[in-house]
Length: 212
Image (cartoon, rainbow, N blue to C red; front, top):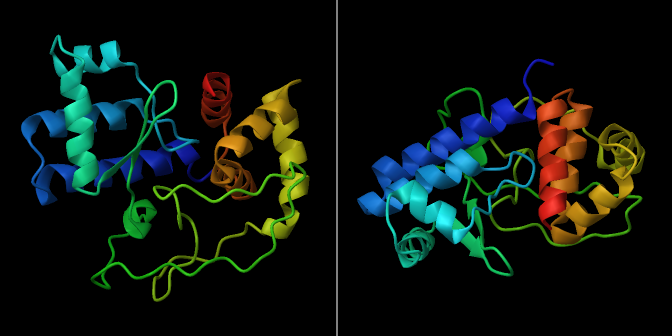
């Protein structure tokens, strides 16, 4: 593997964190919260779900309201999305260029073109991608990004291989992830097609499915 999914996501979250630190009006507490999100980020789902007590401990405070206020502050700044339901889930708002290896030279980020390929999934679940993950790994007009090898028409076949790699409950794991956000399955399939899927990514997928 030239680069794993974990390595690519590490680059994405480092750029996101730098943006929060230097390019926003975030308070010191909000910046610490952003670091906690980056530190707990799941490389497959691109979000995290630490509990209130864990967040309070990471921020060095006793009141669980403090992390909640910090999360709302980052959400108002447009750099974080928060989803409720059981444990809150926190997802950085990535930009299309955050995953690129090279530094972009074309100035402002441009709108991302939607993929016109037809999804052919064996899971039978096609949901709208979350706002924090939309457009990642898609071709960007005017970018110097190399053409990707992932073909969504082969997604069903890749899902079968992914299920085998995930173990005896592989199909159930994929179905659970897809029910939450179909973009997760697409991300796993793309990583597999590009040779960037290893044990760390599979562990992250299993962990996320157990929590859902």
